[in-house]
Amino acid sequence: MRWAVLLMVVFSALLFSSEVVLTSVGATDISFNGFPVTMELNFWNVKSYEGETWLKFDGEKVEFYADLYNIVLQNPDSWVHGYPEIYYGYKPWAGHNSGVEFLPVKVKDLPDFYVTLDYSIWYENNLPINLAMETWITRSPDQTSVSSGDAEIMVWFYNNVLMPGGQKVDEFTTTVEINGVKQETKWDVYFAPWGWDYLAFRLTTPIKEGKVKFNVKDFVQKAAEVVKKHSTRIDNFEELYFCVWEIGTEFGDPNTTAAKFGWTFRDFSVEVVK
Image (tube, rainbow, N blue to C red):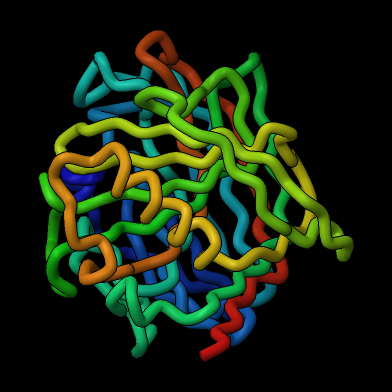
């Protein structure tokens, strides 16, 4: 669900001293806490809008702001307008690697992969929104789109109104460090056989603000079980490629013509344990 962004992305940034600011749809590479990431103002399903938006890196944190109105969608039936985000690794829809040498990597060779993020989000008027992270699992390491035989794995730490697509097929429990304390967390697992296999983990006690640390590999291993049980198009999941780790907020539904919201990402880090 990212193909429209390929027609829209313009790599343009306004640089003011140490700040990098995107004020329209586009992307740029940054070093966030020493880690190479790409930040992307990604309105992949928005045809046009009025208002103000920006995505800014000030050397210490990434912030997003939007006050949009008169939104016209590319696909009026879609439940998502866009996904302003940062990503670490190779994003197939962009055909771009943020500068991570070990990604993409075959699923069978994926090491323990700990992600830490300190975040907060806000929104007005009961906006449909989530705080979602995701990866793409692809048949080759250099794809520029995904289709049947590939998979999307989403991890939703927060949601309001917006719900994962497909059907709930399972539940999952894993340890997540939340604000410095390790906790057992419960997740609902969703699956849909769309143009590619879609999987989403939704935290049953959503976190709107906090610092989380977790092992991405835990979710990939559970996803492998779900794919084995429910997919009719993937029979070699372990041989596919884990490409990227994306972090952002999906927002909107078919009736959303205005959106005022924002987020702040702090203290992002990745720890790979081989």
